[in-house]
Image (cartoon, rainbow over all chains, first blue to last red; front, top):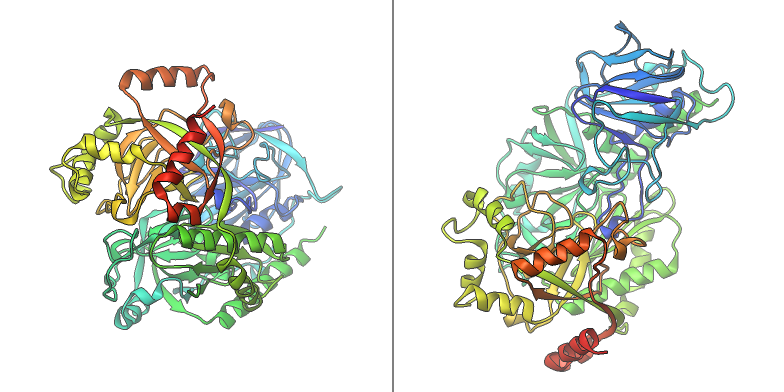
Length: 328
Length: 291
């Protein structure tokens, strides 16, 4: 069983839930940027939640199946079409040998997750099938898929009868995208490097997602430049006030090179570097960022550690409810 | 001096040993990370030493950020007094300085540089007080370097030269990062050399290229079959300047998979190095070149 790639979409990669444990060598955790959508797509087709699937960015691929399977599409609103006939999202549907899966225009969000019963069967590399494009590692030949590729499908399954069509996650159990995007972050790391007034402006300003927004990080534009607290730069840091002695970057950390455009590192984060960070986006809001399109307005909102943990618990409850609903 | 701890969101704790770079800070950070690894704390996911700081990623559902911070603080005293001696290795890496590929790349991004009328090498030689590029290269390749961090992208080493602080080469990063850097570029930013393991964006000044792969995800290169990445924190590196002909010959041998860098065991003691830098480096070179 295989999937033939007729057209690849804009940037479609094989992802699972990532390869934690190698960040000290510069390998990011990776995995589906929207973890909730990744998990749900797999459960809908009867796969374990960490099976490998396709993450399509902004635009869907066109795929042909060589054998029958069950498919589900979650995440951003990218309408699937089977042989030209529109299919529901967040619901599993059957495909036959020779069927073609294509997609309409993106109606919401930024990334869709396409799961196939059995999972995409690329080799495990450092414990994961996720594609790390920057390091040409994992996934399908370490890169985004191309026309002509044949993606092997495996036998990753939760057991007999689990891959049934027509299973759905009701809208009430999905993550609701708010009208106004508020990205919650915990101030810290090198927050002390900017003035109090600059800190206040950072939260007052409305930022917009820049076109440079990918799996490595999301850049934001439109706010006022940061003012730094004056100091003599420490030895080894470099001369710009935004420079630090190269350090580790947490996932979700917000760096501001030259104090102008904040960049939120995401699942394929560069593991370290020499720019100060204002703090990090809380874990509960990482999926939200994965679904932001360029030009989308957004504000950063400061939270305390206790608030971050409460949001994490709420987010965990969302995952638990979806798991319970989709239990085989 | 106390480590400055900060929560990085709910899943990370970041520890800054000092704002400025020093080998003392590196060793303290490494000792902290070694202590975390040895303690096998449930919930710890990633442990990363850096130049003068470190970071721990954990699952807050298994250990609360407050408890994780308490654990880390309990290691602080032990780390400050830990033995700063490493059983490590010295690796000799050929470098073709003033190569045509980094030159072509820096010319494409000239408007992003602080001095568009000089090359990266001319600029770096001048701001570091060297009369010629040749003298600058002699200083760069003359004394060994210490791998004080691996990261940014897979397998990229940050290197700190084993010389006194006033002799350290320092250079700013580009005003705006380039979108391209040739693979295996030897670059410099702040007081750090870096070797770009893959082609991609970068902000460091560019001085040359090494023919030797330092990262191989396919694990076919003969010295990278067991580990994809050549470097680990604590490794010592000596650059050896190559001519174009030598570079081409090395590259040919690498393509035939017949080449590997000289790698020898050695030890490094920070106390000994601080007492006698010249003597320590001479012993490192004996370890590399001796029989």
